[in-house]
Image (cartoon, rainbow, N blue to C red):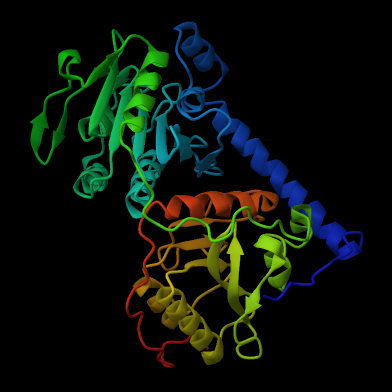
Length: 432
């Protein structure tokens, strides 16, 4: 393999300026994250704790294996809008009894606005991630108020949850208190339901035009004595799954660390050469470039990330021509032929490339590309505008390698198998 040689001097004025801009944007992001963590505010949180109850992130922490990471998804959704930051829902990836799971935890301290689209979309996204990556879904549910669902939007949540059942992806729900509105779908459509005695109360909700009765205490799969007992029972349910990954393990273990510091990424956040970014996230900074002299506006090639092989398509900011599109389609075809995941980095794809990505069936991970080609996970780096984009969250550039590694591991819970055919390159489908 080819070792990238991209040593930079972070003391130069250009890099110092880029670093300053990045730190300023990260400070704004941290302020937004603080708003999300604050839930419904100090009074609501104090009142909730006074009742002997846990906050959603406290519930998640007690559910997870000790000292295991939790990758929170879209934590600052709603940032810059009229709606609460975080949408009153915590979603993310975590390990329970050694099993990678998708976790949804509703925040009962945050009052829901019936016109706020973010809570429902955030839960639906979590369910789709669980489905695409074959990850058990654990719901930790308690509603703030007895709200009325929006039927024209809630049907999609019912379909997403029902799809998990049809695909034999296990779903669990721990009910800590009153549950109403769209949250009712979570216990009603879960395989296993655990109710906290004396607190859980699930209101009825029409499904497909027929009112489904609320789950009574004597109908629960298990009754918990308190919140901590409910989380213990949820862990016990996951342990009994005997769940195993279907995708291959990392090819290299332990993986080699990049030869360059992640801290440098703060200074190259708007770099024109993505090789500098790759040198700080790929194992050993090793990268085999594909067609290096052809279609220079797109950098393509092969590497490993936390031991998992990846194909890379990285943009330089320049527009794509026929050459870049042909190069991208060719690499997508090769990745599918070798069952190799794809990393899409800061690229703006044209119709031919998007068609090939749509037909591709290997996992796609996207950074600063939005959801073009329906990636399993999509993230962005802090941008000038605070509002979140079409992705799973804004991340600190220094955390990029860790975040992508967690997502690659989660994606390999499912079978990793490329499509037999991803289309034929057609020059007419290119944005000139």
